[in-house]
Length: 313
Image (cartoon, rainbow, N blue to C red; front, side):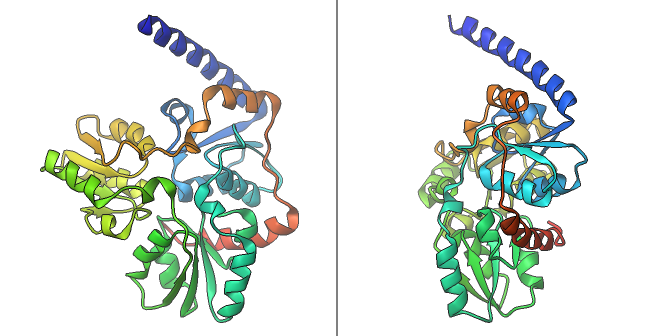
């Protein structure tokens, strides 16, 4: 029975993929997908990447319609960079708890308390927070942004773990917001030690959104793309992975002969996983749900994203 159910599911998925390909052509659409998406979505994406790469592709695309398979702030960023294009998201409930941890009122209060500081916002923020931001960054280019920003005092929002990591590479004063990624922050030192005992020859690769004491254990610390590239190019053939489990698809595509052990079975972002092929097909069919950003907010937020894109990952 289980084999029959899997066969039927595979058949439905193939039908959905064919329908998506047809609709994509009719709509002159491009599909952008984050590495944390379900494997079947990653498989059909026109571009697969992390937040920085996806922002680059969103700005560069000549498609009329952008289907963003990620979470809401990513779709907002694509719309901000492409105000004249239609931006769809398969499921508008795909939010980001970290982005919700910072609000405009609190940020304005902090700016008033530190008038000489410039705001650096992780891209994992809402459009209205970006509108109060001098420059955005991603985990790929955060160090470069901080190093090159013309200010000795930085207000950093919202991820305290990434902020702590970046602060180690600068003498600038960083005022760090108390936000975090629910998925990455739950990884503990005990989790890592347990896997290290089980796989003593494996290297530990970790995302800087994890807790500082976990990041300190890393043989390599980097963004999602950085982790993927390191594992692909490394002479090592076994890794303990400290980031969201969606990267398993690309890791095994890039390095089919290497072994990957995820540091915790709980490192799954439920918001990233709400998107699926059926919802993607429905979005292209109905041209809904569309991302909308008020023009005044978009104009202010666009400057912070454009500054971010000047700094290479």
